[in-house]
Image 1 (cartoon, rainbow, N blue to C red):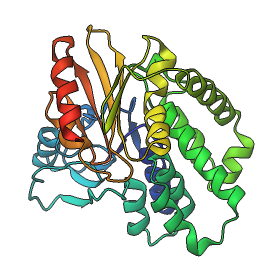
Image 2 (cartoon, rainbow, N blue to C red):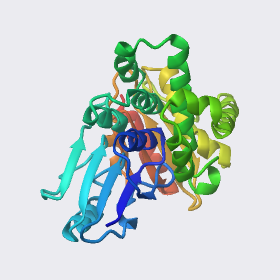
Image 3 (cartoon, rainbow, N blue to C red):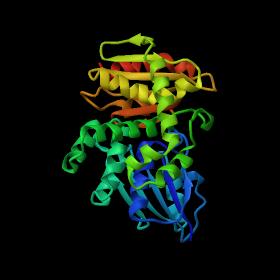
Length: 318
């Protein structure tokens, strides 16, 4: 029997899996990729008697592959907070899904484990820009401000590393980054002992400094649109730059676009922090779009659809 751990390569997916495997260790085949590479279940060649744990990837996007796995006699455990659509009704599926704006997959695993690895749930929540949720979880732990800042930075670094159109854009492949994280039960030990994290942190800060010099391509009453240069650093930074903008300007929505290899755009959208909803609905209106209410994206927006997207962005948050 083979077990597969299938997870989003960002902070939430990595930390959710790490919590789970600290409490429920098992040998597994890892299946992951860049943040937007979420149609991961199709890569799983599991057969009858095998098992799969899926974390932080949309059940809607993976619906056909999920049904195929279940039909082959594979048991699937599913944790996620993205739009799921209609889940299959099957005895082989255990689904823990909550799409509320203040929830991430790390928080769902924290609930499942009764809070036994909560520090990692904080890292996941900080990485998904859910500061209020992270601080609420942290309240009974009695952490000092400096410790919270360290966990926040760790989450931001793990999240930043996953952005990019291809693996060559990344500082580290998410599977390798997970293996680095998995060596440490204590996140503070990870921060202190792993040079890879320091390298990711330095790159993130440099990329954010570059992005902060840019001005919006378009401004609306309730939204801004940024078009970043065609470069690896801009593809890496678009997600954390979107989070930074959302935190600085909480009344506004933000769209960050980078050019892709097909002549179109990859899009990241952040709903206003003051009203964290609508990003997923906007992005699902375009092929390849999805995400969650507060933060979503489009994997490929054709050049000829840019004007339509701009109109929809303005209307969605007017």
